[in-house]
Amino acid sequence: MDTRSVILDRAVELLAASESGDVSTRAVCEAAGVGQPVLYRLFGDKDGLLAAVADRVWGEYLDSKRSAVPSDDPLMDLRDGWDNHTMFALSHPHAYRLVFASSSSSRPAAANEAMGLLQSILGRLAAQGRLRMDPADAARVVMAANSGIALALILRPEQYPDISLSVSVREATVRAILADTAVTEPDPAQAQRTAATTLIAGLQDSTVFTPGESVLLSEWLYRIQDT
Image 1 (tube, rainbow, N blue to C red):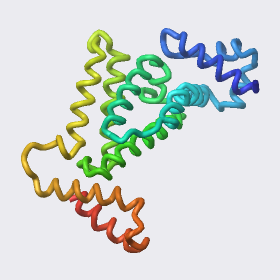
Image 2 (image 1 turned 180 degrees about the horizontal axis):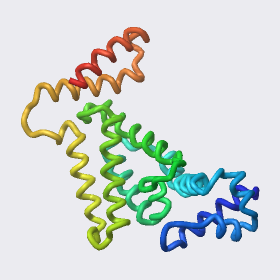
Image 3 (image 1 turned 30 degrees about the horizontal axis):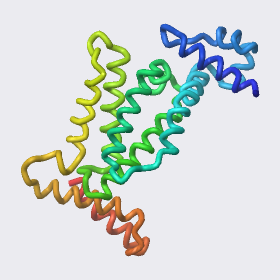
């Protein structure tokens, strides 16, 4: 095993065992059997090390998402993804905080990949005509809500002792982004925006239009969507 992997393994172990959610570079170096100059040469600084640790832990979680076979119902996949996200946060609270509750200057890449995987599910919902907003906007709404309740469960267990609250927040978020549950009264403007969102999602794989026509049509549809 190379030196970088050894340092990461020891740092992951120390972070998981830490009560405070912090580890010192000195402790990591001692556990890995290397000098601090080696650590700084490989990771730049402590922030760089912790970003790499977060990506290592999150990588195992994201592996399951990368290999998951989508079901016929993207809404079910969305709900399952939310629940898995919450359970991962509770199982790896320190690594989770490194991604969603850290002021570190080094940003783990895991957050961007998680957002991309979420957006792909929401894109499938949009293609079915079930999403009331752009998939990228919906992804930001869902991720903010999911990470918010996960952090509340981790950081304020005395105020949020019941994990079932995550399900309540999940369903409130689903109602907010889905066209078929978001409103109870007909809204022509919203219907047009939903239709535009559906058509935009479908254009990505369409062979009906030339590239130039697709660009022009997308511009018109985005104008309706943003109205």
